[in-house]
Length: 381
Image 1 (cartoon, rainbow, N blue to C red):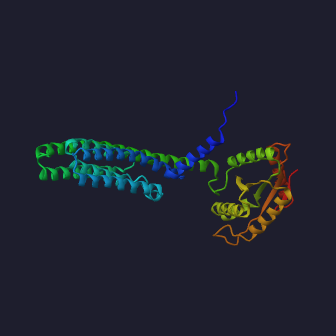
Image 2 (image 1 turned 60 degrees about the vertical axis):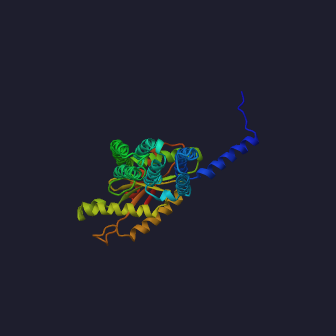
């Protein structure tokens, strides 16, 4: 059974829909998500605007103030949408602008409470919803502020209308509505505050866990003294290089280096100076090699260098430049005149041999270099 093929027209329509979606929501993923969420909220406001227009047509809300509130809703949401679609809000700590949007929504609800007297009790439900939605983005302190603002602005609207329109807003009823708002919004704010604190704590724990994992990864792959790769991680790099060579061909060379007479440095100057020499040598190695090369502290005063896509002749030139650079470098701040040299064994990996055999040849080369008087490079056979 063959798979169905899209006709050119269907493919073009798919591209057109994709282009249209990017045009509306934006290509940046973060902006795309924010705009999509905002458009969901916009749907709620559209429903509220339609209900307001219906109330105006039915004579429930005064036309002048009603249409002003309608315009306030449309313009306000257009501004929020534009700030998110342009990417401007991404520079804020809260790109979703939950705090200003909560203030906007609660202000709108308090005005609607004053205009829609037959159904004003529904404003309390909407206010609670606004406060509850704050748990997803607001800080714990902001959730308390939003709850207090909701009580204050609804209370102000109730007091104003009870004073200026006691027929539709009897003071006794408004007082009961206010007490209901205080109790309901206080409970909602307390719950949202707790949820926001829990969200912050989980976020902080997640960050700490991520940092701990990064530190564990660093410790697992890095030599604590020199900051170079450790032996275990270098073994993984060597295995990956063998796999790469098997697949794509080419050559790579390994170099085993050993600092000459390092024990004399420790005995004469102390282990603190010896550690500084190891650190300085590792730094010189890293600076002298290519970014594609890898160097590890192999053990004690031994270092292993992996030179990908490098044949023996090029590796020998690299070691010559390294030795020249080393002789002009000071590795210890306490003993600036102290210079060190190294011996090395080289081995170009052969596709028909194991990695262990290549390392053994490099080790034999290092042994021959030391036996021949140190301070030289020897190819292992």
